[in-house]
Length: 80
Image (cartoon, rainbow, N blue to C red; front, side, top):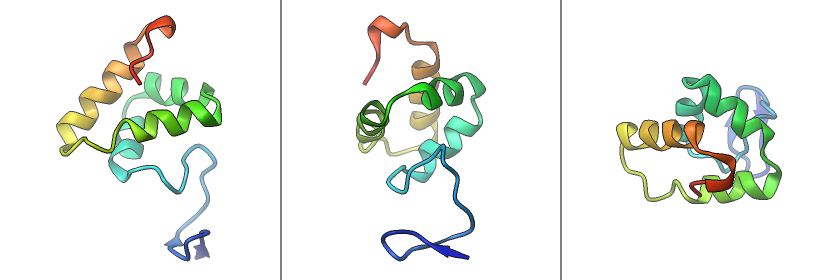
């Protein structure tokens, strides 16, 4: 088992997700292929901004709705 930069154990390194990503966001992204594809295409600053905009989300349903909106958002109208 690896250790990340905060000495938290993790099973493996997945370059798609960051150490600061909320677990619920990662799970919701993996359940929505369109959102996951879109997330992978973001640059690092955009990923940080998207992650930051999820910190007020308090339920699995809210996170899933957020990710669904992200997946369907027009590029000129990014939701974060």
